Image (cartoon, rainbow, N blue to C red; front, side):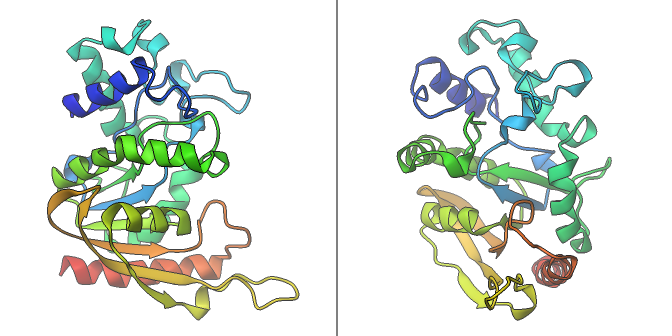
Length: 266
């Protein structure tokens, strides 16, 4: 993981990412939680800026800090980082859920796969969270230009492949349509779609927003072989940001993930 992290840090220092809204003083996030012990991983787009800054935009410090920054390590450039400081960044990723995790986001997601016997939390945690792009951006992903999104995906797409290939992850859970579409493109795979009537989100004056499940397997990402097949379970509603995701819908998604994941583990 040291080599992966150093390659990403080099991209920040050499200006490759200067026009992409990447926060230049924030470490890349390879994983949220211990990927080595995980059989389940949730997948998102990229780390939130709130992993590094408060609601007012100031850098998190002291007990509020979640990850390393140039300031926390006493560096002026990432190229100055010694192996011991690289290890501190890796430790911040591995031990994320043992510190000050962004529970407002992760607790809702964990509830959905808890029936499969996996958890982000605890000494024997067996789940982690990964992102398609390991860099936090000052601008939210949905507000980035298409050009910037493509640049970030192209420059970092191999990272996710290497992480999964060197792990024991059996199931990837995709939270929302944007993640699903991006992974399909990166893996050159078309997932199986099924309309789930019980997941429909009610809307006044219309039939509502349909709920859709996605299933399949991937064996490569960004052209890099994973050396095995990884099962994919996805749902089109983003649990944290889609409007009107009811308790009934969340329960339906949880029941589906529980059954589907347990079939993979059998």
